[in-house]
Image 1: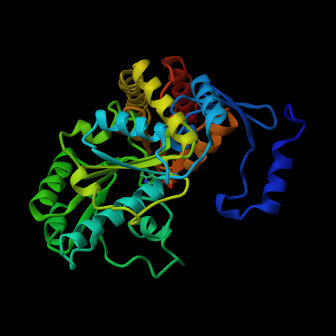
Image 2: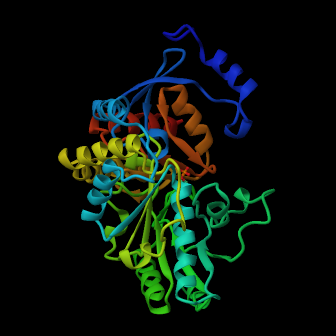
Image 3: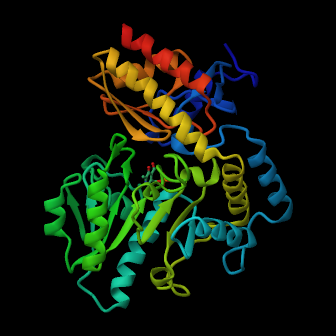
Length: 401
Ligand SMILES: Cc1ncc(COP(=O)(O)O)c(C=O)c1O
């Protein structure tokens, strides 16, 4: 079978295998078109997309708001360098800071670069204070913060390190949510603690609310910065604009990316004036980060999320989705638990996550397996209850087998 452009999945896969570094595996389909929560591959097969480019395409696919913003800004100015003020960047920074603790924003092209900025800022703050011993970064087992050297070093999972050593020095890895290990490790050498309030790649694993409060308190008492990595759980995905807003804590730094641009590559590091102003002229920077095209698009996405009340929609549909999955856990032994918040959902299985992912793909549905015991569901934030029913009915068919 061939797609509308006359080229099949198999043909694209062959050409990809012949040209690309194989770091994304060799079984991939070629996706050629999307609309709302649906995707079509090169063979013309339709899928319900419950992954959204891994928590990125918050408005689904081919959304007119994104198309129009890109077209409008492309007509005006695509790029001009941060040597000049970028008005769309100013407006996006104002939008984000009006809705958060942030007084300063640094824009990047990706999540991992936002983490790099956060790590560098933490060490820079200690340096400027004259605390030259304060350079350690504490991170928790199961975390994922990105693939560049600083971010991968801060990622407490050995599988991402193998073959890339030596890593960035000064990273301290602690067991997940271990209060006494944290109490022992966090001291005069700690520049920052970095954590994802809900670990994404670590299996959609939320930190307990009490633990988040403890980290926040110990960081402020002992002079370390708290970095909340909200690259996956932020921008409305869990039913608040930023996930930490569920927990009544104020981090020193928050990193976002993914859903911020709805599909265009943009990330940001949000912080206070007290910390952010330490990144003085020339101390840090990026060529593309915060460029006019990305910022204008991200601003249009953010404004749409607010205008359409999408975050309340996430809270409602997310609860509906998790309730439906919980009912499956109550009914079938193979399904163990539902984790997460809003539309960041992990379905814990006894085993068979890879098999279920394959089964769903064959039946026109995209999720992703984390290990063999978790299915990650991070659909577009616009998903409706009908689509949720379709998804849970299909998952139930597999659980029945
Ligand atoms: C929590 C978290 N931090 C950082 C990153 C890295 O972001 P990027 O892939 O945009 O560099 C990811 C990506 O999956 C992530 O989920």
